Length: 68
Image (cartoon, rainbow, N blue to C red; front, top):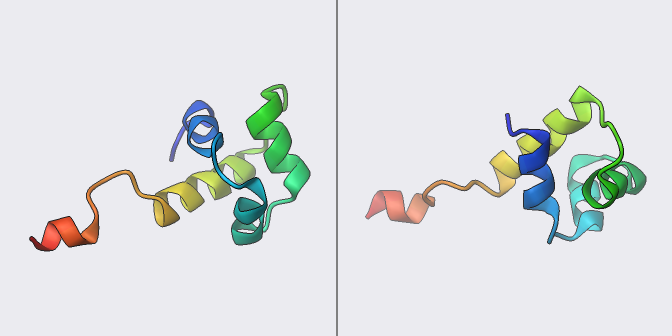
């Protein structure tokens, strides 16, 4: 699982509405977590965002490069 700081960094330039649509989280929760930095999200919220990033936007090698 990614840390809160890693999640914020990775989400900072993404479309927050699309993240909300894909994760089921409310826009206010995601916006205030990413933009304000002053909120204290629940563990479940961090888990959902971390899973979203790891599942939909892996940082490792792509499947194509593994096949080559």
